[in-house]
Length: 198
Length: 375
Image (cartoon, rainbow over all chains, first blue to last red):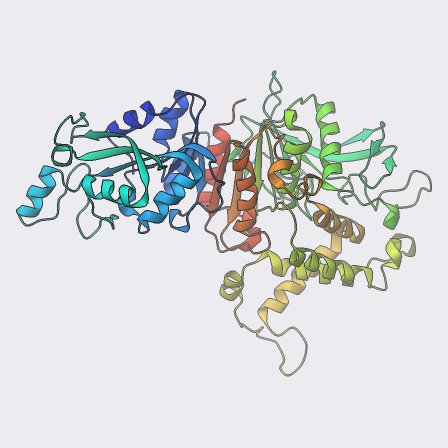
């Protein structure tokens, strides 16, 4: 599985990281984000369970640890990384709060990107009687790996409830352009930079 | 990529060292020899050399075959050769028989220079550190300042790990396969039973059986049978042998009745026919003693802090001798140091022996990693 299109959220994620920093990319796939970050001087490691994707990441010359995210990040020390990234994957993880807490234990801060189920076209799809299918939600209901369906407002509510500090947010439309208003309505993909609250 | 083929006929070489080597046991070998083989060509920059470290019963004949023994294939021939994952069109590969071995390097069955008789039990116990030291002396002679990679499975993987700790400037990549950072009590227990089988064989003669013209084959056979059980997985044994009986087998007796018995007896006999009992004792002891964290208060990450290599760690799902969890200990210690590391956990039915098998995904991971090794 490879992404035909450039991942616009990667540019947002990369803009939040500086050369010399370290990053752990959860569900790194073929390692494209880590390659992009390596070119900018960020040192990265990925976690990927799928053998084919893990092999592709090795081919791409990135550090990749074959491991199951559902087993948590137990082997990692506190504050081991400057950043822990979970891109377009939070909606596939069953234990949402646990993974967020683990990311903020292992990382100084975390970056999370996810498809916004409240994007207007998704709302339209449901109004028309169907589950949404789009570039950011490319699966049919019967074959989707997604197990959690939530919106930007829902995510921000969870962060507040968990005492998680939202430090930055970028919202993208279907074409990857930055959304500047009515985020929860016009945004197809949301990218958050979060940290441990005080 | 070029077509996969055999490296073809190869030659065993032997190098005599006249500078003494000081061993961890506190003794020094004044003169000693290493048997080795090389495949491919060392490039002008001497930057494409790969060292293969062998496991318990391995040796320097890693790939290819001998012209007069076309069926005697190297033990990792499926991995090494032109167009193979460890591509000899690109890399200069060195296989070596470790000190204390019984395939040509100085060991218990070599003659003691003072007496002209085999060393036998008087040969010092050697450690993984000693092997690294001896392998480095071979590298000196071959003109290799730094290995592009040191590669090993099982006890060989432990040597690759030790290289990165003892001589960090001389190894750029370490491929640590089906290994562990130290043996558990259970691992040592298996080794002890194997050793007891040899030590209590009446023909062992306190390790000086050579002068009696006998060999403790019964003990060696039992040791190998026990070892073999730990190399396979329960699933694989069930599938391969299950409760199948030999067609000619009797019943209500103690002869070879089940297929698994026949298989183990065959493996034991074959091994006892050529392997040296003192080398077996020594190799298992080297395994027991291996513990790079020991001198760092048990902290493996502290032991690996000095490493400069990049790592590929590989484990196999059904390996219970050195399970994936043991490899993860290595990975976690490397991550704690922010070392470059990738880890593959290969799904395989073949237990510990999987590292020797020609598994497409396993070999693809090794090939992909090695392609990114700069030379």
